[in-house]
Image (cartoon, rainbow, N blue to C red; front, side):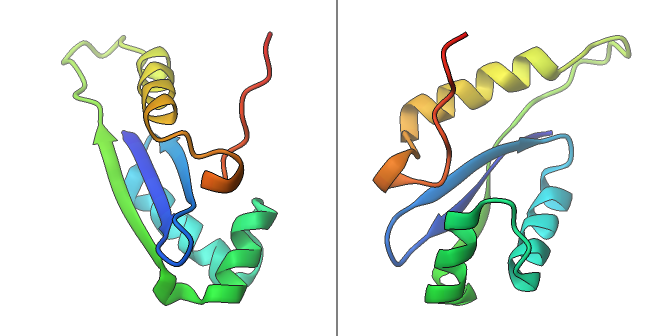
Length: 103
């Protein structure tokens, strides 16, 4: 459980995401891009323009889960993602993430 990044090495744009199973999510992201069915239209367009060799798929950070079976990692995962989004700022010209809307 943790965070992943898809980095476009051709233009430096990146997508930051979280998942309960990071390796499985990275496989899913690759499959969606190969099939032309990724929900992020900008990322899909760049994949089509630059090709798969221009992209790096990586694990950014993992949560260490306590032994407590009642532990719900959702809040910790949200905080971890917010920290990485603030650090890398993958929005607009720098990335594929969309800024959160104020509540």
